[in-house]
Every structure is written in structure tokens, then in C-alpha cells.
Length: 64
Image 1 (spheres, helix red, strand yellow):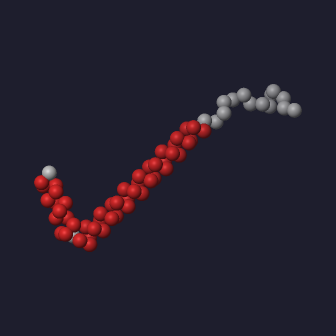
Image 2 (cartoon, rainbow, N blue to C red; image 1 turned 90 degrees about the vertical axis):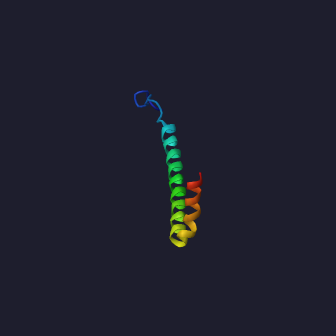
Image 3 (spheres, rainbow, N blue to C red; image 1 turned 135 degrees about the vertical axis):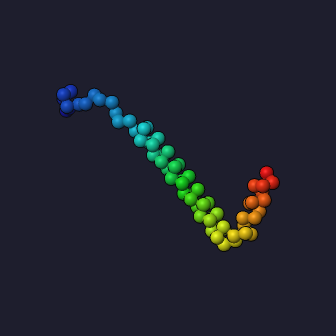
């Protein structure tokens, strides 16, 4: 059916490299989204509560 001249004997494509890269990319995107969300929440607390929010943080930094 197929002749040996047409059949390729090369190695199969390296799927594990792309899979590993995809998993790392997904983890990096999730970490970026989580850190970004927390940064927005922290910024909103600073803007809304100002001294009420920053005073306990300031005292905690000084006391430790």
C-alpha cells in the first residue's frame, strides 16, 4: 500500500515541550490575575478608607 520511499522515519513531534510550556503559561496567567486582583482591592481600600486603613499597617510595620 505504501512504499518505503514515501514513509518518513523521522522522530515524532515533541508534544511534551509544548504541553509543559502551556502549563507554565496557564500558571503564570493565573498568578498575574490573582496578584492584580489583590492589588486592585488594596488600592481601593487605600482610596476609600485612607487613614483608617493605613494607620494599623503603619503601626504593624513600626512595631515589628
